[in-house]
Length: 263
View 1 (spheres, rainbow, N blue to C red):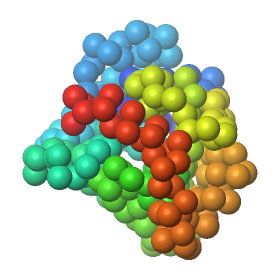
View 2: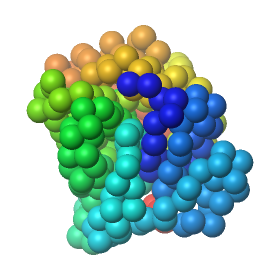
View 3: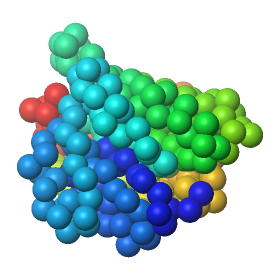
């Protein structure tokens, strides 16, 4: 799929990673539609890139539908929006649980469902779902976040098979810990000892590769994290014991405390 000349809908465009993806796509010649909860937060970026803005709160199913209807000519969907949902499940209200699952799982599925028919008819299109390494390996205080990211991974891999032969590709991009963007930049939490981080530029390059090469799954992480997440997926009991009392568990506790107000 060629990015140049394609109309791209990017959700979560106001965040640090979203802005990096938007700038890269614009440099590659894409016609951008930027989406986030607040239009005013995207105006400067839209002016810089010559993009159109469609505001939508993805926690509201009606606004998800509105976003899809406002972007009928989408060639490439990059579902990048997500909300933090770390913490003990018992501390969440039912409404907070619904909001987390709606933004992180339901919204990207519904956007893909709404925009794919036009792509299939044109026999041209691509859907990128931005997940997380947390979709392969569970950690403490991440039950809601991992539930959504595990679900997103299953959806992406299966939907890709459903669309095989239609000219429409589906890719899953799963970053590890990202420096200068994402939860560590937002919370100031200290990364676990010995854990290498990736840059926003590496994630951006992964998104572009996924589209241009029709890749199934792109894991943007250091090789040791790729291996550890694969092992944790196969041997979750072992991974659980290895994490107890580690610096990773302490880091997650810092993140939970910093993100509590964003539920």
